[in-house]
Image (tube, rainbow, N blue to C red):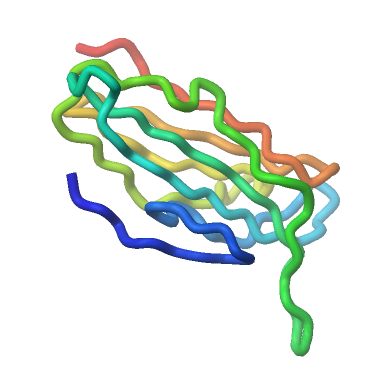
Amino acid sequence: MRSLGAREIEGHSDEGLLFLHEVRKRSGERRLVRVGVWCFPSKNKSGFIISMRTAVYTVASFGQRPSQLGGWTKYPGDDEPFGSAKEIRIFAGFVEEKDPSKFRIPVEVDSWQGVFTGQLTDDDRIDSGYSFPPPP
């Protein structure tokens, strides 16, 4: 497994920065959403564990840095092993065109495809989840 290199925003570092996009609340207010990821072998070394965290920031303007709103939020099912997966591929995330409060991050575990999802709420939280259809 290759390390993605450390990234840092507001003093938080992680293995990889998966997603950093402007997302809009349903009210239209703009926020910066960040999703970081850590991948490491499971305790018995038979698979991988993916650990993801999200954070919400104000959007920066000239002369004003973004500030973090609230703390880091774990994804549901976070720190769960992906069985005996030999390869985990996480693709570029995107904001949904029809609803700019929602975003998706496609993932492939071996050749099994799924998606991590998130939605910015009006109280500056991320409702997050994931969907992996049954393997073929």
